[in-house]
Amino acid sequence: MAKTLFEKIWEKHIVKTIPDGPDVLYIDTHFVHEVTSPQAFKSLEDRGVSVLRPKQVVATADHNIPTINQHLPITDKLSATQVQQLTDNCKKHNIELYGLGHAYNGIVHVIGPELGITQPGMTIVCGDSHTSTHGAFGTIAFGIGTSEVEMVLATQCLLQNKPRLMRIHVDGMLGKGVTAKDVILHIISKISFNGATGYFVEFAGSTIRAMSMEARMTVCNMSIEMGARGGLIAPDEVTFSYMKGRKHTPVRDAWPEKIAEWRRLQSDKNAVFDKEIYILAKDIQPMITYGTNPGMGISIKGKIPTSAGMDDNGRKVYYQCLAYMDFAEEETLLGKKVDYIFIGSCTNSRIEDLRQVASFIKGKKKADDVEVWIVPGSRQVEKQAIEEGIQQIFEDAGFKLRQPGCSACLAMNDDKIPAGKYCISTSNRNFEGRQGAGARTLLASPLTAAASAITGYITDVREYIN
Image (cartoon, rainbow, N blue to C red; front, side, top):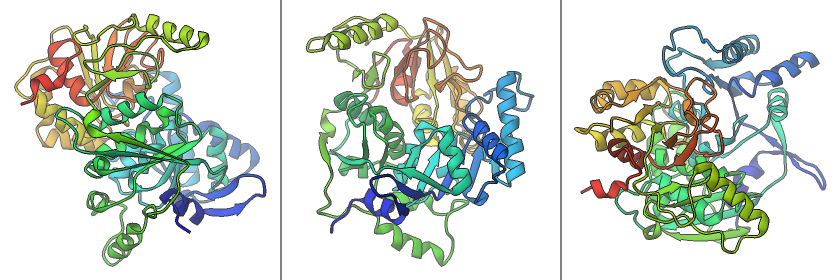
Protein backbone atom coordinates (compact mmCIF):
# COMPACT_ATOMS: atom_id res chain seq x y z
CA MET A 1 0.00 0.00 0.00
CA ALA A 2 1.36 3.44 -0.96
CA LYS A 3 2.42 5.54 2.03
CA THR A 4 3.27 9.15 2.71
CA LEU A 5 6.65 10.19 4.09
CA PHE A 6 4.97 11.00 7.40
CA GLU A 7 3.38 7.54 7.62
CA LYS A 8 6.69 5.81 6.92
CA ILE A 9 8.43 7.63 9.77
CA TRP A 10 5.47 7.41 12.16
CA GLU A 11 4.91 3.69 11.71
CA LYS A 12 8.60 2.93 12.23
CA HIS A 13 8.44 4.65 15.62
CA ILE A 14 5.27 3.10 17.03
CA VAL A 15 6.08 1.17 20.20
CA LYS A 16 2.49 0.26 20.90
CA THR A 17 -0.95 1.14 19.58
CA ILE A 18 -3.63 1.61 22.20
CA PRO A 19 -7.04 0.37 20.93
CA ASP A 20 -9.31 3.36 20.31
CA GLY A 21 -6.55 5.54 21.70
CA PRO A 22 -3.19 7.13 20.88
CA ASP A 23 0.02 5.51 19.75
CA VAL A 24 3.03 5.18 22.01
CA LEU A 25 5.60 6.92 19.84
CA TYR A 26 9.35 6.46 20.32
CA ILE A 27 11.33 9.73 20.29
CA ASP A 28 14.80 9.73 18.77
CA THR A 29 15.97 13.15 19.93
CA HIS A 30 14.68 15.42 22.66
CA PHE A 31 15.83 19.05 22.75
CA VAL A 32 15.39 21.01 26.00
CA HIS A 33 15.94 24.64 26.97
CA GLU A 34 15.74 26.71 30.13
CA VAL A 35 12.09 27.78 30.03
CA THR A 36 9.94 24.65 29.69
CA SER A 37 12.23 22.09 31.35
CA PRO A 38 12.66 23.13 35.04
CA GLN A 39 9.18 21.98 36.10
CA ALA A 40 9.63 18.68 34.24
CA PHE A 41 12.94 17.95 35.94
CA LYS A 42 11.49 18.93 39.33
CA SER A 43 8.56 16.55 38.86
CA LEU A 44 10.93 13.71 37.97
CA GLU A 45 12.93 14.43 41.11
CA ASP A 46 9.79 14.49 43.27
CA ARG A 47 8.83 11.07 41.87
CA GLY A 48 12.31 9.63 42.24
CA VAL A 49 12.56 9.02 38.49
CA SER A 50 15.75 9.49 36.47
CA VAL A 51 16.14 10.45 32.80
CA LEU A 52 15.89 7.18 30.87
CA ARG A 53 18.21 7.95 27.94
CA PRO A 54 20.25 11.11 28.61
CA LYS A 55 22.37 10.57 25.49
CA GLN A 56 19.27 11.29 23.40
CA VAL A 57 18.64 14.59 25.12
CA VAL A 58 20.36 17.79 23.99
CA ALA A 59 20.11 21.06 25.92
CA THR A 60 20.82 24.71 25.23
CA ALA A 61 20.07 28.06 26.85
CA ASP A 62 18.39 30.41 24.39
CA HIS A 63 15.01 31.91 25.27
CA ASN A 64 15.87 34.49 27.89
CA ILE A 65 19.63 34.85 27.75
CA PRO A 66 20.98 38.38 27.12
CA THR A 67 22.29 39.26 23.67
CA ILE A 68 24.88 41.75 24.85
CA ASN A 69 27.64 41.22 27.44
CA GLN A 70 27.03 37.49 27.66
CA HIS A 71 30.31 37.15 29.57
CA LEU A 72 28.73 38.96 32.52
CA PRO A 73 26.30 37.44 35.06
CA ILE A 74 22.65 37.59 33.96
CA THR A 75 21.03 40.50 35.78
CA ASP A 76 17.38 39.41 35.44
CA LYS A 77 16.74 37.15 38.44
CA LEU A 78 14.19 34.86 36.77
CA SER A 79 16.36 34.40 33.70
CA ALA A 80 19.45 33.74 35.80
CA THR A 81 17.55 31.18 37.88
CA GLN A 82 16.21 29.33 34.85
CA VAL A 83 19.61 29.17 33.15
CA GLN A 84 21.24 27.94 36.36
CA GLN A 85 18.53 25.31 36.88
CA LEU A 86 19.13 24.02 33.35
CA THR A 87 22.84 23.80 34.08
CA ASP A 88 22.25 21.95 37.35
CA ASN A 89 19.69 19.56 35.86
CA CYS A 90 21.89 18.66 32.91
CA LYS A 91 24.85 18.00 35.19
CA LYS A 92 22.72 15.89 37.52
CA HIS A 93 21.33 13.76 34.67
CA ASN A 94 24.46 13.66 32.47
CA ILE A 95 22.81 15.56 29.59
CA GLU A 96 24.87 17.36 26.93
CA LEU A 97 24.45 21.11 27.48
CA TYR A 98 25.44 23.85 25.07
CA GLY A 99 25.02 26.56 27.67
CA LEU A 100 25.76 30.24 27.73
CA GLY A 101 29.36 30.79 26.63
CA HIS A 102 29.72 27.40 24.95
CA ALA A 103 31.12 27.47 21.41
CA TYR A 104 27.97 25.67 20.20
CA ASN A 105 25.44 27.69 22.18
CA GLY A 106 22.47 29.11 20.29
CA ILE A 107 18.78 28.85 19.54
CA VAL A 108 17.71 25.23 19.87
CA HIS A 109 16.30 25.01 16.33
CA VAL A 110 19.45 26.50 14.86
CA ILE A 111 22.08 24.42 16.65
CA GLY A 112 20.34 21.06 16.04
CA PRO A 113 20.70 21.24 12.25
CA GLU A 114 24.08 22.99 12.20
CA LEU A 115 25.61 20.35 14.49
CA GLY A 116 24.15 17.49 12.46
CA ILE A 117 22.02 16.28 15.38
CA THR A 118 18.89 16.64 13.24
CA GLN A 119 18.79 13.81 10.70
CA PRO A 120 16.21 12.47 8.22
CA GLY A 121 13.71 9.89 9.43
CA MET A 122 13.86 10.93 13.07
CA THR A 123 11.18 11.81 15.55
CA ILE A 124 12.16 15.00 17.37
CA VAL A 125 10.42 16.91 20.14
CA CYS A 126 11.12 19.96 22.26
CA GLY A 127 9.16 22.06 24.71
CA ASP A 128 8.94 24.77 22.08
CA SER A 129 6.34 25.47 19.41
CA HIS A 130 8.77 25.89 16.55
CA THR A 131 10.32 22.44 16.77
CA SER A 132 8.66 21.99 13.39
CA THR A 133 11.79 23.67 11.96
CA HIS A 134 13.59 20.31 12.01
CA GLY A 135 10.97 18.91 9.63
CA ALA A 136 12.96 20.48 6.79
CA PHE A 137 15.23 17.44 7.02
CA GLY A 138 12.44 14.91 6.59
CA THR A 139 11.70 14.39 10.28
CA ILE A 140 8.54 14.28 12.34
CA ALA A 141 9.31 17.18 14.64
CA PHE A 142 6.85 19.01 16.87
CA GLY A 143 6.55 21.02 20.05
CA ILE A 144 5.34 19.56 23.34
CA GLY A 145 4.18 20.89 26.71
CA THR A 146 5.97 20.66 30.03
CA SER A 147 4.12 17.51 31.18
CA GLU A 148 5.10 15.87 27.88
CA VAL A 149 8.71 16.99 28.37
CA GLU A 150 8.61 15.05 31.62
CA MET A 151 7.11 12.02 29.88
CA VAL A 152 9.85 11.91 27.25
CA LEU A 153 12.61 12.43 29.81
CA ALA A 154 11.27 9.51 31.84
CA THR A 155 10.34 7.09 29.05
CA GLN A 156 11.81 8.32 25.72
CA CYS A 157 8.25 7.88 24.43
CA LEU A 158 5.17 10.00 23.98
CA LEU A 159 1.45 9.32 23.69
CA GLN A 160 0.29 10.79 20.39
CA ASN A 161 -2.78 10.59 18.17
CA LYS A 162 -1.89 10.37 14.50
CA PRO A 163 -2.81 13.65 12.80
CA ARG A 164 -4.47 14.06 9.42
CA LEU A 165 -2.14 14.71 6.52
CA MET A 166 -1.96 17.67 4.17
CA ARG A 167 0.37 18.30 1.25
CA ILE A 168 1.06 21.79 -0.05
CA HIS A 169 2.60 22.00 -3.52
CA VAL A 170 4.45 25.18 -4.50
CA ASP A 171 5.61 25.20 -8.11
CA GLY A 172 7.52 27.58 -10.32
CA MET A 173 10.29 30.13 -9.97
CA LEU A 174 10.10 32.84 -7.34
CA GLY A 175 10.33 36.44 -8.50
CA LYS A 176 13.12 38.83 -7.53
CA GLY A 177 13.08 39.87 -3.90
CA VAL A 178 10.77 36.97 -2.96
CA THR A 179 12.15 34.62 -0.31
CA ALA A 180 11.16 31.52 1.62
CA LYS A 181 9.71 33.76 4.34
CA ASP A 182 7.40 35.32 1.77
CA VAL A 183 6.38 31.85 0.58
CA ILE A 184 5.25 30.71 4.00
CA LEU A 185 3.59 34.04 4.87
CA HIS A 186 1.71 33.84 1.56
CA ILE A 187 0.58 30.28 2.31
CA ILE A 188 -0.61 31.22 5.81
CA SER A 189 -2.48 34.26 4.48
CA LYS A 190 -4.35 31.98 2.05
CA ILE A 191 -5.04 29.14 4.49
CA SER A 192 -5.49 31.35 7.61
CA PHE A 193 -3.83 31.02 11.00
CA ASN A 194 -5.93 27.95 11.86
CA GLY A 195 -6.55 26.50 8.41
CA ALA A 196 -4.24 23.51 8.95
CA THR A 197 -5.38 22.67 12.47
CA GLY A 198 -5.27 18.92 13.05
CA TYR A 199 -2.92 18.29 10.12
CA PHE A 200 0.75 17.53 9.66
CA VAL A 201 1.89 19.22 6.45
CA GLU A 202 4.31 18.01 3.79
CA PHE A 203 5.68 20.77 1.56
CA ALA A 204 6.42 19.70 -2.00
CA GLY A 205 6.85 21.06 -5.51
CA SER A 206 9.60 22.54 -7.65
CA THR A 207 9.78 25.78 -5.64
CA ILE A 208 10.47 23.88 -2.43
CA ARG A 209 13.02 21.63 -4.15
CA ALA A 210 14.89 24.67 -5.41
CA MET A 211 15.27 26.06 -1.88
CA SER A 212 18.39 25.79 0.24
CA MET A 213 18.17 23.92 3.55
CA GLU A 214 18.11 27.19 5.45
CA ALA A 215 15.17 28.39 3.36
CA ARG A 216 13.36 25.07 3.90
CA MET A 217 13.84 25.48 7.65
CA THR A 218 12.13 28.87 7.44
CA VAL A 219 9.13 27.30 5.72
CA CYS A 220 8.80 24.40 8.18
CA ASN A 221 9.41 26.70 11.14
CA MET A 222 6.18 28.60 10.46
CA SER A 223 4.01 25.60 9.56
CA ILE A 224 2.49 25.72 13.02
CA GLU A 225 1.42 29.33 12.43
CA MET A 226 -1.41 27.99 10.28
CA GLY A 227 -2.43 25.60 13.02
CA ALA A 228 -0.54 22.53 11.77
CA ARG A 229 1.04 20.06 14.18
CA GLY A 230 4.20 20.38 12.13
CA GLY A 231 5.66 20.46 8.65
CA LEU A 232 8.20 18.39 6.78
CA ILE A 233 10.04 18.18 3.47
CA ALA A 234 11.41 14.99 1.95
CA PRO A 235 15.22 14.83 2.06
CA ASP A 236 17.21 15.04 -1.17
CA GLU A 237 20.70 15.93 -2.43
CA VAL A 238 20.35 19.44 -1.02
CA THR A 239 19.76 17.91 2.40
CA PHE A 240 22.69 15.52 2.17
CA SER A 241 25.08 18.21 0.94
CA TYR A 242 24.14 20.45 3.88
CA MET A 243 24.59 17.65 6.41
CA LYS A 244 27.89 16.19 5.22
CA GLY A 245 30.80 16.68 7.59
CA ARG A 246 28.88 18.17 10.49
CA LYS A 247 29.78 17.26 14.05
CA HIS A 248 27.17 14.55 14.63
CA THR A 249 26.52 13.24 11.11
CA PRO A 250 27.64 9.72 10.18
CA VAL A 251 31.20 9.36 8.92
CA ARG A 252 33.24 7.06 6.69
CA ASP A 253 31.44 3.82 5.75
CA ALA A 254 28.30 4.77 7.67
CA TRP A 255 27.71 7.85 5.49
CA PRO A 256 26.84 6.13 2.17
CA GLU A 257 24.71 3.61 4.04
CA LYS A 258 22.74 6.40 5.66
CA ILE A 259 22.36 8.24 2.36
CA ALA A 260 20.87 5.11 0.80
CA GLU A 261 18.45 4.81 3.73
CA TRP A 262 17.47 8.49 3.63
CA ARG A 263 16.81 8.46 -0.12
CA ARG A 264 13.91 6.11 0.55
CA LEU A 265 12.23 8.75 2.71
CA GLN A 266 9.79 9.99 0.09
CA SER A 267 6.02 9.89 -0.19
CA ASP A 268 5.05 7.12 -2.58
CA LYS A 269 3.65 8.17 -5.94
CA ASN A 270 0.10 7.08 -5.12
CA ALA A 271 0.16 8.05 -1.44
CA VAL A 272 -3.11 9.56 -0.24
CA PHE A 273 -3.31 12.80 1.72
CA ASP A 274 -6.42 14.04 3.48
CA LYS A 275 -6.02 17.40 1.76
CA GLU A 276 -3.90 18.80 -1.07
CA ILE A 277 -3.27 22.47 -1.85
CA TYR A 278 -1.60 23.90 -4.97
CA ILE A 279 0.16 27.26 -5.11
CA LEU A 280 2.00 28.96 -7.97
CA ALA A 281 5.27 30.73 -7.18
CA LYS A 282 4.45 33.52 -9.65
CA ASP A 283 1.55 34.58 -7.42
CA ILE A 284 3.83 35.17 -4.43
CA GLN A 285 5.16 38.65 -3.76
CA PRO A 286 7.14 40.12 -0.83
CA MET A 287 4.80 39.86 2.15
CA ILE A 288 4.12 41.79 5.34
CA THR A 289 1.61 41.30 8.14
CA TYR A 290 -0.80 44.00 9.24
CA GLY A 291 -2.56 42.40 12.21
CA THR A 292 -1.91 40.33 15.31
CA ASN A 293 -1.66 36.80 13.96
CA PRO A 294 0.58 35.50 11.15
CA GLY A 295 -2.43 34.83 8.92
CA MET A 296 -3.11 38.55 8.63
CA GLY A 297 -0.68 39.12 5.81
CA ILE A 298 -0.74 41.00 2.49
CA SER A 299 1.65 41.58 -0.36
CA ILE A 300 3.91 44.57 0.24
CA LYS A 301 1.93 46.68 -2.24
CA GLY A 302 -1.45 45.27 -1.24
CA LYS A 303 -4.23 46.80 0.82
CA ILE A 304 -5.54 45.67 4.18
CA PRO A 305 -8.72 43.70 3.42
CA THR A 306 -12.16 44.70 4.60
CA SER A 307 -14.32 42.86 7.10
CA ALA A 308 -16.84 41.94 4.40
CA GLY A 309 -18.10 38.39 4.81
CA MET A 310 -17.08 38.06 8.47
CA ASP A 311 -19.57 37.11 11.16
CA ASP A 312 -20.15 39.46 14.10
CA ASN A 313 -17.52 37.86 16.32
CA GLY A 314 -14.96 37.71 13.53
CA ARG A 315 -15.59 41.36 12.71
CA LYS A 316 -15.18 42.34 16.37
CA VAL A 317 -11.84 40.53 16.66
CA TYR A 318 -10.72 41.95 13.32
CA TYR A 319 -11.34 45.53 14.41
CA GLN A 320 -9.59 44.89 17.72
CA CYS A 321 -6.51 43.76 15.79
CA LEU A 322 -6.56 46.84 13.55
CA ALA A 323 -7.07 49.11 16.55
CA TYR A 324 -4.06 47.60 18.30
CA MET A 325 -1.93 48.16 15.21
CA ASP A 326 -3.53 51.55 14.51
CA PHE A 327 -4.33 50.53 10.94
CA ALA A 328 -7.54 50.75 8.92
CA GLU A 329 -9.37 48.69 6.31
CA GLU A 330 -8.14 49.16 2.73
CA GLU A 331 -5.08 50.99 3.97
CA THR A 332 -1.74 50.51 2.18
CA LEU A 333 1.26 49.86 4.44
CA LEU A 334 3.88 50.78 1.87
CA GLY A 335 5.65 53.95 2.99
CA LYS A 336 4.57 53.77 6.64
CA LYS A 337 7.17 54.81 9.21
CA VAL A 338 8.95 52.07 11.18
CA ASP A 339 10.90 52.43 14.43
CA TYR A 340 12.70 49.12 14.92
CA ILE A 341 14.05 46.34 12.74
CA PHE A 342 14.66 42.91 14.26
CA ILE A 343 16.49 40.34 12.15
CA GLY A 344 16.78 37.08 14.07
CA SER A 345 14.81 34.22 15.72
CA CYS A 346 14.71 30.53 14.82
CA THR A 347 12.95 31.59 11.61
CA ASN A 348 15.61 33.84 10.08
CA SER A 349 18.87 34.02 12.05
CA ARG A 350 21.10 31.65 10.09
CA ILE A 351 24.22 32.60 8.18
CA GLU A 352 22.34 32.58 4.85
CA ASP A 353 19.92 35.20 6.25
CA LEU A 354 22.78 37.38 7.46
CA ARG A 355 24.62 37.05 4.15
CA GLN A 356 21.48 38.08 2.29
CA VAL A 357 21.04 41.18 4.45
CA ALA A 358 24.73 42.11 4.21
CA SER A 359 24.69 41.78 0.44
CA PHE A 360 21.77 44.19 0.21
CA ILE A 361 22.97 46.85 2.66
CA LYS A 362 26.64 46.93 1.65
CA GLY A 363 27.61 50.52 0.97
CA LYS A 364 24.33 51.87 2.41
CA LYS A 365 23.42 53.50 5.72
CA LYS A 366 20.39 52.87 7.90
CA ALA A 367 17.87 55.63 8.44
CA ASP A 368 18.83 57.82 11.41
CA ASP A 369 15.62 57.24 13.36
CA VAL A 370 15.50 53.45 13.02
CA GLU A 371 17.01 51.06 15.58
CA VAL A 372 18.30 47.84 13.99
CA TRP A 373 19.04 44.66 15.93
CA ILE A 374 20.59 41.69 14.20
CA VAL A 375 20.76 38.63 16.44
CA PRO A 376 22.56 35.54 15.10
CA GLY A 377 21.01 32.16 15.82
CA SER A 378 24.13 30.63 17.31
CA ARG A 379 27.72 31.21 18.32
CA GLN A 380 28.77 29.47 15.12
CA VAL A 381 26.68 31.86 13.01
CA GLU A 382 28.16 34.79 14.94
CA LYS A 383 31.68 33.46 14.31
CA GLN A 384 31.01 33.06 10.59
CA ALA A 385 29.57 36.57 10.37
CA ILE A 386 32.75 37.98 11.88
CA GLU A 387 35.11 35.85 9.78
CA GLU A 388 33.31 36.65 6.52
CA GLY A 389 33.33 40.39 7.15
CA ILE A 390 29.55 40.52 7.54
CA GLN A 391 29.78 42.15 10.96
CA GLN A 392 31.87 44.97 9.50
CA ILE A 393 29.30 45.55 6.75
CA PHE A 394 26.61 45.76 9.43
CA GLU A 395 28.61 48.20 11.51
CA ASP A 396 29.37 50.40 8.50
CA ALA A 397 25.63 50.59 7.81
CA GLY A 398 24.79 51.39 11.43
CA PHE A 399 23.35 47.95 12.21
CA LYS A 400 24.09 46.25 15.53
CA LEU A 401 25.18 42.61 15.51
CA ARG A 402 24.25 41.31 18.93
CA GLN A 403 25.09 37.95 20.52
CA PRO A 404 23.05 34.76 19.95
CA GLY A 405 19.65 34.12 21.51
CA CYS A 406 15.92 34.23 20.93
CA SER A 407 16.00 37.95 21.76
CA ALA A 408 13.13 40.16 20.59
CA CYS A 409 11.24 37.27 19.03
CA LEU A 410 9.42 36.86 22.33
CA ALA A 411 11.09 39.51 24.53
CA MET A 412 11.82 37.25 27.49
CA ASN A 413 15.11 39.09 28.03
CA ASP A 414 15.93 42.80 27.84
CA ASP A 415 15.36 42.98 24.07
CA LYS A 416 11.90 44.53 24.11
CA ILE A 417 10.24 46.84 21.60
CA PRO A 418 8.72 49.87 23.38
CA ALA A 419 4.94 50.29 23.53
CA GLY A 420 3.40 51.86 20.45
CA LYS A 421 6.51 51.43 18.32
CA TYR A 422 6.46 49.58 15.00
CA CYS A 423 8.95 46.78 14.46
CA ILE A 424 9.51 44.91 11.22
CA SER A 425 10.53 41.50 12.48
CA THR A 426 11.83 38.38 10.75
CA SER A 427 10.44 36.25 13.58
CA ASN A 428 7.37 34.03 13.42
CA ARG A 429 4.66 35.60 15.57
CA ASN A 430 3.06 39.02 15.73
CA PHE A 431 0.72 38.50 18.70
CA GLU A 432 -0.21 41.46 20.90
CA GLY A 433 2.70 42.16 23.24
CA ARG A 434 4.83 39.38 21.80
CA GLN A 435 7.84 41.68 21.39
CA GLY A 436 7.06 43.81 24.42
CA ALA A 437 3.95 45.26 26.05
CA GLY A 438 2.16 47.40 23.47
CA ALA A 439 4.73 46.72 20.73
CA ARG A 440 3.42 46.54 17.16
CA THR A 441 5.00 43.77 15.09
CA LEU A 442 5.01 43.40 11.31
CA LEU A 443 6.40 40.08 10.09
CA ALA A 444 8.48 40.13 6.92
CA SER A 445 11.53 38.63 5.25
CA PRO A 446 15.13 39.62 6.02
CA LEU A 447 15.28 41.42 2.66
CA THR A 448 12.17 43.48 3.35
CA ALA A 449 13.46 44.23 6.84
CA ALA A 450 16.84 45.32 5.47
CA ALA A 451 15.33 47.58 2.82
CA SER A 452 13.03 49.18 5.39
CA ALA A 453 15.96 49.75 7.73
CA ILE A 454 17.70 51.75 5.02
CA THR A 455 14.70 53.89 4.07
CA GLY A 456 13.06 54.17 7.49
CA TYR A 457 9.65 53.09 6.22
CA ILE A 458 7.94 49.96 4.91
CA THR A 459 9.66 49.35 1.60
CA ASP A 460 9.29 47.10 -1.43
CA VAL A 461 12.78 45.66 -1.75
CA ARG A 462 12.20 44.99 -5.44
CA GLU A 463 12.58 48.71 -6.13
CA TYR A 464 16.21 48.44 -5.06
CA ILE A 465 17.17 45.16 -6.76
CA ASN A 466 18.49 45.21 -10.31
